Length: 191
Image (cartoon, rainbow, N blue to C red; front, side, top):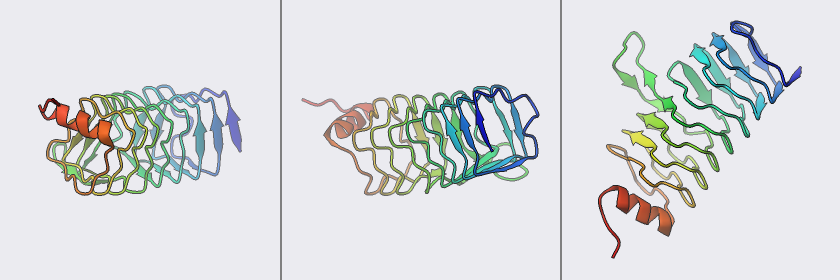
């Protein structure tokens, strides 16, 4: 089944298992995606503003041109998802350990794609982003807190003001401008 220009109501998809469905220009504004799973779905130019996730999973889904801003992805799971060309501003990716409100578990995003996306002021806490492609993305003010960025690529990405504090940066790829932006964020000044 495919949907176009549909507004999803608060509990309309609660507990649903949705597979191989295309959503085009749909609005999930303030919807509660409680115990909902999406598998191999495409969300093209959709708006997820104010969505509440609880036990929500996305597997092999793509979000081209979609808006996923101002969201807390803590109660959601993303497996092999493609966020290329999506807007994810002022959001947070983190996982809390089961039964706790303060302890973070490692959030595995290794097989997700973020190339050419807008991630301004988005926070990644304790995420495994090994080999993840951020090339061509806009990341001003983003935070990578205790993340694993081994062999991740930021080539042609805008990383001005990005905070990599406590993150594992090993064989992480930067172009010349990215190297300068990284240095500036650490207090260095090019002369």
